[in-house]
Image (cartoon, rainbow over all chains, first blue to last red; front, side, top):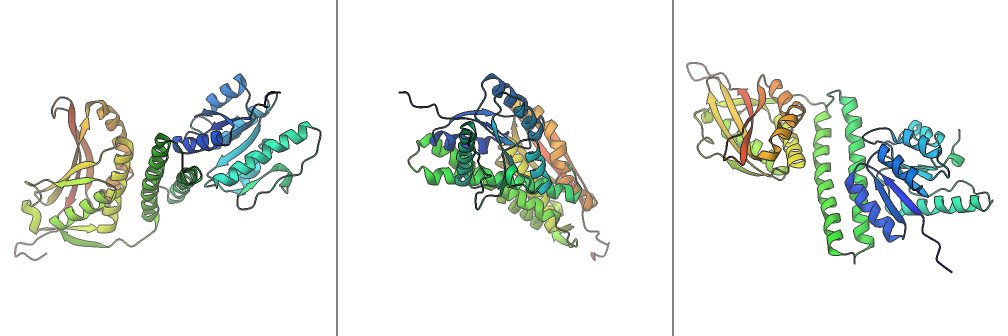
Length: 152
Length: 220
């Protein structure tokens, strides 16, 4: 029996240096990786071949990551979305989560923790597909949030 | 670039978070996978160096936002050249003091300057120039012109970069040396000599600063 295909992660960020490291680390974890430098390219790639998860920077050169997140949520099937942001304000976090992001991670993050959040987010996706309920996951040492743990 | 301090503080801290994220991710990748192939290792080391340098420039921007009382003191021309040279060297430049001009007629006269303000502006401009055009060598020289000192900061520029440099310089100077020069009742501007050797030209930032007033009896 063939091995199940590893999940595909789309990294959306216009900073080449962070993309270089994230792409390398994700490939080491066995994920299939695609990269987009702006919102338009991200949506084109996501529509052409939907990823399982999108690592989405909030500040993109052509539009806001929040707008991209909203469009991603309209796709069928909709990918999981982890927003990456250099802004730590609560209002930004809430906005991202209201728009349907699964997680909100503030830069600078630990890549070990980020990889754990990616695994958990994808795992929760599988559990939901299996009809199981999954509570919001919390990760110590990483400023991130999920809709289910949000007080609003 | 906005000169509103709060907006600039927000932009700078956001950029710092981005640079720290890139630096941390590269360092962790190097730590986690010590046996990675040499090309990848070199690229990640390049990220660490580049982001550390970017962060250094951003710290300088933050320092400039901290309110401080201007301390204007008269410095000799050669001392001013040394101050600017130090600032530029700190940003990774190799600096030549132009031999025929580093001891100009104004050398024994003095220029009232806020060392911190001028040094920070020079560091900031140097960091932008290195980041955006990979320039690492430049010349510094000075001439006394009537009651002003004309400082020249020049570097070689490839033909292919000249138009981009012309577009870039307005914003780069506006965020660094131009406001600093104006704070000293001076001026800063850019010019480009496109006919150096055909393949390259010479770019030059000129700073005009008032010399200390000297009375006829020699007193200041």
